[in-house]
Structure formats: C-alpha cells, structure tokens
Image 1 (cartoon, helix red, strand yellow):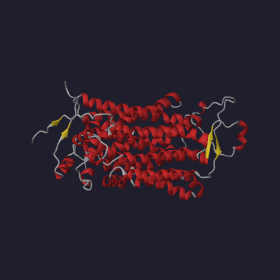
Image 2 (image 1 turned 180 degrees about the vertical axis):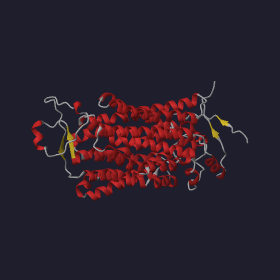
Image 3 (image 1 turned 45 degrees about the horizontal axis):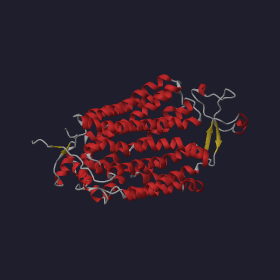
Image 4 (image 1 turned 90 degrees about the horizontal axis):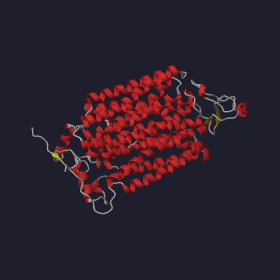
Length: 506
C-alpha cells in the first residue's frame, strides 16, 4: 500500500480590497442561527405576558386583587426580601388569554413536532437543490408567520397551534443546511473556526431572547416580540438569497484565488464533483465513529434541554430570585457559552497549524472539556443547596463548557465526511429533537413537587448522561476521513488526497 502524499497548500493573496466569500457565508450562517432561535424562543418569553406574568413587585395593597390566583412556593425563600415588609410576594397578573397549563405546554411543544419531522427532508433538499434557495425561502415564510402570531392568537388557539408547528417545519431545514454549507465552503484546516462562528448564533439567539424580550414587552407589549423577531427573519432571508451561492464554482464574485484554494483543499472536492443523489446511507448508519458523535450529541442535548427549559424554573422557584432577575440570570450561561465557543474554535485551529497533533486526539481533548465540564458542575451543584452565588456560578459554567464541543465531536463530522455533513447532522439532530420532547416531560415527572431532593436527582442524572456520551466518543470517535467516503471519490474519478495544511517554515 502506497503512502499518501502530504500537500502543503496556501491561499494565494487576492489583489485589492477583497472580502473573502467563505467568511461571508459563515457570518450569514451565524446570523441564520440567531434567526432560528429568535423565531423559536420568542413565544417562550412572550407567553408569560400573554397568559399572566408573575411580578415580584406587586404592592401589598394589590394582594387582595390577586389573592385567588396561584402562587409558586420556593425552596429557598430566605433569599426573597421585600424592601419594606421583609416579605417577598410572588403573584400572577392576569394576561389577555385564559390558557391552561396544559394548553401552554401544547403550544410550546408543537413547534418541535414540525421541526423534528422536517430535519431529514430539509437536509435532503439542501443536498439536492443547494444551500441557497431552500433555506432562504423557508426562513422567509417562517418569519412572515411569526409576524402574524399576534393576530392568529386572537383568532383561534387551534390555528395558532398549526402556525407554530408550521414554523417549526420550515425551520427544520436551517441547521442541516448550515452544516452542509461548512462542508462545501470551508477548507479542512478552517473547519473548526467556521463551525464555531456559524453556531455561535445558537447562544446569541438565546442570549438576546432572554435578555431583551422582557424589556421589549415592558416597553411596547408582547406583540412586539414577534414583530421584531419576524422582521429580523425577513431581512436575513433576503440577504441570504442575495449574498449566498451554492458552491465556490457558482459564486459570481469570488476571486479566482479563493475559489481555487477552497476546491483544491477539500479532500473530497465536494463542492465540484461529488454526486449529491448518491448518499451511502448504510455506511453512514453503521459507522462507529459517526454513531459515537450521535451519542455525544444526544447526551449534550439533554444538558441543553435542562438549561433551556428548567434552569429558569430552578432560578425562580428554587433559588427564589424575582422575575426581574430570572431573565438576566438565565441569559448568563449563553453569554459564557459564546466566549467558550469562539475561544475554543480559534485555539483548536491554532494548535492544528502550530503542532503535529492528530485531529482525532485534539477533538477528543476538546470534547472532554465540553462534556466533562457539565459532568462536574451538575455533580457538585446539589451539594450547595441554597447557596445562591455558587449555584448560579455552577449553572453558568455547566453550559459554558458546552461551547468546547464545537471544537470536539461536532467538528469531527466535517473531518470524517464533509460532503455528507448536512445529512449526518440531520440524523443526530432529529434524534435530539425527539429527545427534547421526551426529556422535558421526563424531567417534569422527576421533579414531582419540586423539592430540593428531586432537583438533586435531575442534576445527578444529567451528569451521568453527559459522562456516558463522553465515554462513547472517547472510545469510538475519530476525525479520520472515512473509507466509505474515499470509495465515493473513486467512483467519481476524483484523486484520493489527504490534505494537511501547515504554516510555511522559513
């Protein structure tokens, strides 16, 4: 067996002032993930005002007006101090809609039924028709429907359910298409940075929603949460359709130097010669390295579900923080996650360029940080009980470490099979969406009466699931180009090359 040649590629400089096309794609992808989470989470915050908002500043004179409304007991009430009476009263102010908790749960979850169903079809569409049109058109329609939510809410609850499910359906194409765009536009040595930047919008979208939605509702009313989110979605969709193209070879404004650099660097020449209709489904679904990333993804998604749906409840109802602070404190983990995600992406690429470390080893190191952090945080958290400061610190760090996974098992998909990233990510993300639906209900059942001992159980289970996902990836994960990908190259008469990019030695 002949040894493979190592190529040392360097991008030729483009004369004049030139913005690299692949970074335009990456920035637009990051804004696209922000758009995804703005449209998805806008209802999560607005529904509090639509149905009734718990307000810690209700005056004692108004207590008799809301006496018959439900209150939420806290496990750590000693933190709740009223400046004038030494009592902290949690009350509900009635909203415009009289929806039961069961209806609210249905309304919040119906998005994921559509979102889950369209994951694989969305990936298939981006593979068949390119990354530009399917995502741009679907996102624009979803944004228009979001703007219409206030009107729909007042017309019919059933119609609102159908609209939210449709929005989820349309947004199912987003993440698989973004993953596919990285496989098409990113040279192998830049996969980590492009993936990290593209998916920073997940944390940014949550950060913006949690931190700003309450202020928007307070200033303008709950309707404006949907107006603003939908307007942003429309503008982004138009920009995506105007600026993005399906591959470097189809881009009318890309420089010859950048186009050659991208197409020559891609080990599969996926942007130019691969056959999108010929997906090796059996090879993908029986690949141990790929399946190890699926297990890790599912494990991480459990942590995300806890952070997204239950941490605000823990901050408000267990630690006893007032509603004015819950949004800000809930946003902190996402802010720290952004720093971790960007920092790990830059550091990972720097290490690859400066050292001879194997990609597989580096991916496993960052996965150990990204999944080991939540393991330790959720394992330690129950020990501090009602220590508010340490509890908030651990809740923040638990999700902060998750950002390192984008330099770990997640980017391994780009290493092992860049031209099938969209399909492969869609499979694991579909499983994660199903898990999110089930996990939310399981955790609710585990919490029971919301006692501190039940919360301990939830945190211990979360720690164990993260540990399992990490262990599987460490045992079976790989960043090597898979043999079944190489066979596809031969069928397409593509030279089998392994690209390793280094800085030129002086």
